[in-house]
Length: 59
Image (cartoon, rainbow, N blue to C red; front, side, top):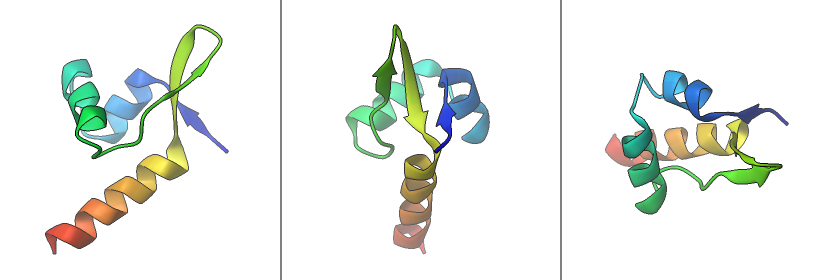
């Protein structure tokens, strides 16, 4: 299982801003992060699944 930090997630999603990413979380477009220690991480496979689901709904 691979974890993405905020910068890696932003890069994966085309350079989206921090506020846009958290808006996406609030609107359930991407999964919520998990806290490990003092930092937040996203599970890459869950993000990939959310992207694939969004692409299917858009088609």
